[in-house]
Image (cartoon, rainbow, N blue to C red; front, side):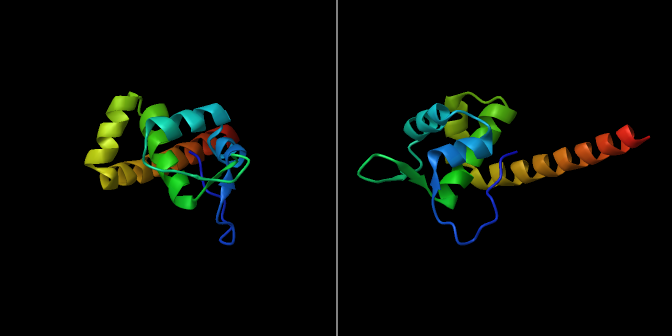
Length: 111
């Protein structure tokens, strides 16, 4: 699952950094930006996008719904509009279960 690097001084992330966090191409980030009018990154005169931590959290929700849960874009939009808090709880549970699974797989490999 993508994560935000723990650097409290960093306020903005470039599109390449965001794409690397999620392991996707920058074109997918641009596509989701247009498709999910939930956020508007800051753009400088050159057109370089700068995303905030809140933008990245929104991307995490979208990534979870579309890539990990298999929602369609329309389904993800509806879920985000209806119950974003529930999505965050599901995502946290999913992340915890993934960590447990990885832990158990590591133990199995050591046996």
